[in-house]
Length: 217
Image (cartoon, rainbow, N blue to C red; front, side, top):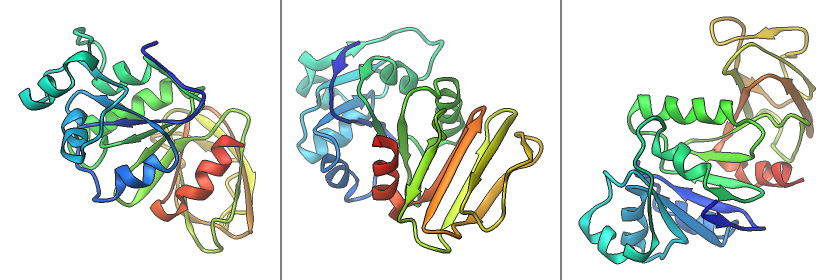
């Protein structure tokens, strides 16, 4: 491990960021780690990261010079930079921003890594959504708002149980090429969900606060 923290950590990638993404996430997590080209976002914002991790083929010369003492070069090409960085930080919860909305293959690679390391808690932040893998012990979501969008998308064969949704999902076998539950809706003040197998929970961006509370609970 390169970075250890008892508090959440923000992992920043090189894809597009919203104008307030870093400010919002700094209110949840005091430490920021750049993943390769994500260092340029931090340089532009005047933020000094705890580390810069990756194969370093996307970082600018300016960021490379500014953060020279923080660079951790991982040259192997069997994993994407997101996986390299995530596996070298230790925190109870990681926020990942700047990893979606760009190339589709990069986004799919990130989801693949999240599915393979589903025991670790990470919130993927996008322009319109926040996404997690359903924790193995289940999750209790409070305060989402009746009628809010809630999507469940499997990364492999899985079973989901829970309550509080407009369209019940119990009793179905989820699979990437079978049953999924996109654009379901919250029907109760409290939603309970658990899964056997890797299942993505996708919520609207404005649900971030409720999701953080649930993931840290």
